[in-house]
Amino acid sequence: MKAPVLGVDAAFASIRELSARFRTRDVSPVEVTQALLARIERLDPTIRSFVTVTADAALAEARAAETALLRGDQGRPLLGIPVAHKDIIATAGVRTTAGSAVLADWVPETDATVVTRLRQAGAVSLGKLIPHEFAFGIQFPGHRFLPARNPWNLDHMPGGSSSGSGAALAAGLTIGALGTDTGGSIRLPAAFSGIAGLKPTYGRVSRAGILPLAWTLDHAGPMARSVEDCAYLLQALAGHDPADPTSSRASVPDYVAALTPDVRGVRIGVPRAYFLEDLDPDMEAAFADALTVLQELGATIRTVEIPSIEVASAGLLIMLVEAFAYHEPNLRATPERYGDVLREKFLAGALFTGAEYVQAQRLRRRLCAEIDEILMTVDVLATPTARGPATAFTVVLDPTFGFPRYNTLPFNLTGQPALAVPCGFSRSGLPLSLQLAGRAFEEATVLRVGHAYEAATDWHRRRPPL
Image (cartoon, rainbow, N blue to C red; front, side, top):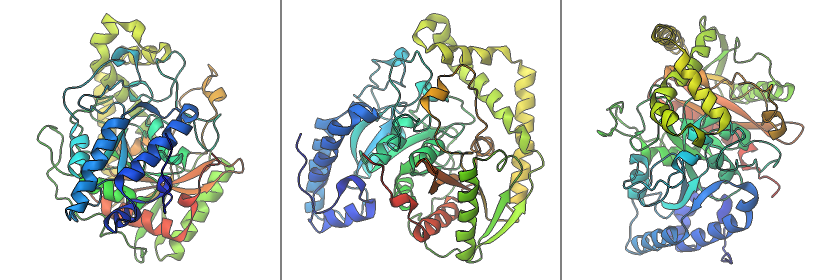
């Protein structure tokens, strides 16, 4: 497919830029969609971010968006904007594989709520993005589908489990993407791929129609190349959904309007224990520089202590038990369809007792109470998103490689909003990331601080050498 010649670099344009140019008829949704489909055709055999590309449907949706624009539709900023969905999110008439042989040919009859809401906003769906199998951790050997590769260095992971979402955005194959996050699966691909990703508050975005990993830890949210683009996507996604029993009725503010480059008076807490331990030297330096930038923008920075932060490890127990509870019927009926390592991880969830699960949930409540109390004295917590840059595939394939202690899991336990923002590069040229977490349902504050940081830096504007 030959890409049309555009007056804008469609692959890396922002939602605001494209939306404005659609309305001035300088470029059309059809042209942008054609350009991205051509780029996917050219680059994705190497990146491997897509499981399914829905080219014909995308072009039909782009033509419908173009017609709506010609009729004067001015109220939907996502109208005509190409997006793609993590392949554990149900899409009517389009196979949803979960990256697994278990569901390799499953075609849902209905859309997940998040897909419906993006359709209602006028977004164009390019297709489905590869996750780690059933959204768990690492793409171990023995999986049905090949893992996505990091556009910054193809020998490295793009993070997980929303690996295809991170890789596709970094490579300029889509404008926005949906991810899910149970222990960091939006924020880690964002960190390792050099993009932005927001895990909203638990209950802020519906999970109806999304295959679960762990019911009490799962979140769904936006991924994009900038905080502003995440705000546009969240605006369409957020809000109560009666189809999701955990969905909140909390009011939804105007996230885009809340974005300003001014963070004067914002109080930022830095929890050094746990989050700043064993950092890669490049990450340590990048994080210190990020705090300096925020301070120069007018924020106040102080150290805070979370006494029970080490109990965050209870999150893995909760995840394994809940994952086994969901997968038990298939594990008994067709265990051979799971990747070998993943199957053993899920089966390990059966080894914990009910008492141990209850104790893990009690520890979780203690951590929630402590972080809630700290966030009464500061507005945002700042940490590195991960302890260093993306891991090489050769390391992951080493049988001695365990589960690194990432900085993301604590905020899955507490359910608070957490944002990953690019904050530098390692000496090897791999992205580094800043994590900002805030009070429940105060995504606007987290997005505001992240946007101000982006406005003062250019890390998010850099592109991989494809």
